[in-house]
Image 1 (cartoon, rainbow, N blue to C red):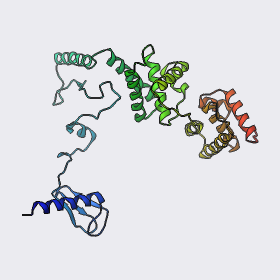
Image 2: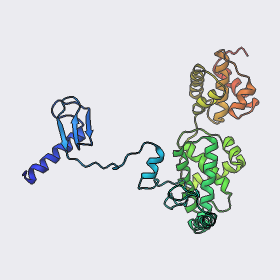
Image 3: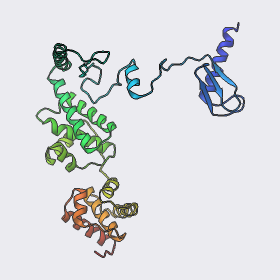
Image 4: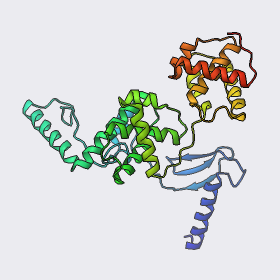
Length: 319
């Protein structure tokens, strides 16, 4: 039998092979795990690098997502998108037993009461009830605006911090939720205007602006100004413009930034003006009304901004 020192040396060498992911014989980087024989093989020369390793995966197989979910022995991962972070259990709404057969009407009534009591037990106090309502509203707004889950989680964390600091007292849930979502979008460079969020959240733009500035100040969040170029891909897609127009718009905005024409002005208005100029010069002209509607600005703003850019950048437009 091999001594303990030899076994330790073997384990050390195996660990080095696994970390380097190279065959010690031929130097090939393509290694294969044979789980039936519990061996680590080199696909090129066939040498057995490791044997009798432990398979940490499941001992069952699943052929579709339903089987995978039903055979899994663990629950969903922790998420900040629910008030209890997904740690509590739920009673299924399916009125069937373990064999898939329908249950009697008396059992249905019993399970209905159990589900009702269970939902009430999950929310212990007014603070949790407020958080549950807020996260539900956050999910609704983010879904309508097609905001990624990662940003929703950031927004939920900001809301939790604001609640812990008692910053939401005297303010509507919708207003605070919309503000935290706007802050999360700003932090992750995902451009969403106040008007877009206000329209979806059914809260005034003024309230969201006042609330988000208050929360950012109290939580000491550093929000950098949104660059107009961040809006170009989405706005050009709405107007069905080519990549050439987008590239020209970026060049126009770059020149405008070098001359200080973008500071102190609405980024959406500047982006709309650059898109309008690029569409005219590229032969894909869009009406100012269409550009204003796609960028959620006004025709007056588009006209004033494009005239400023055309004059300062010496651009000749045949409108």
